[in-house]
Image (cartoon, rainbow, N blue to C red; front, side, top):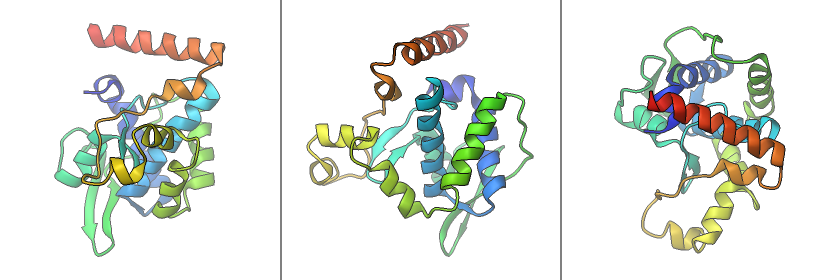
Amino acid sequence: MCLGTRLNKEKVGNLLVKITSDLGVVYHTKLLKLLFIIDETSIEKYGYPISWLDYKVWQLGPVPPVIYQDIRFDGHEYLEYINPVKDELGTRIVAVKEFDDIDFSEAELNLIDAVLKEFGRMSSDDLVQITHEEGGLWKTIVDSKGGEEVLFEEVNTTPYSIDFKTKIEGDAEKTEIFNNALENLEFYASL
């Protein structure tokens, strides 16, 4: 189980609520891409991801399997926060509780709002393309494994994780922030 689910379950759940409440109609692919973009933007700006979810390299881009499984297979981790509703267009995600900002800093809330303002009205397909951009975390891993045609020839998923730390390589201050935050989370996980 990833750190995001073990230690940040309420924060991640409330992030899901915020995205779906703020945007109204959100389908599962769009939700997954927005989660990734929020974490990637947070890494770039602050040196740590907001959710600490584990993102895998899948054909349609980075995906946190724990959220995907809850949405697609009636999982149990986050269904107290969101409800997947199947309709003629796919799986729409609906918040089932009010957003609680207690676990978020003001800076994190501002970052989330900025990401939703910039990317929230884009289509799922547009967001997939953004996560597939040249030089991005997903694309770098896919290219290192032989490219999309090789990696996804037989399956749509892989076991490869996105390493957000590579996004801040060369930035000593953000790397230290990341390492300290990770160390603190791992300490709390060991209690």
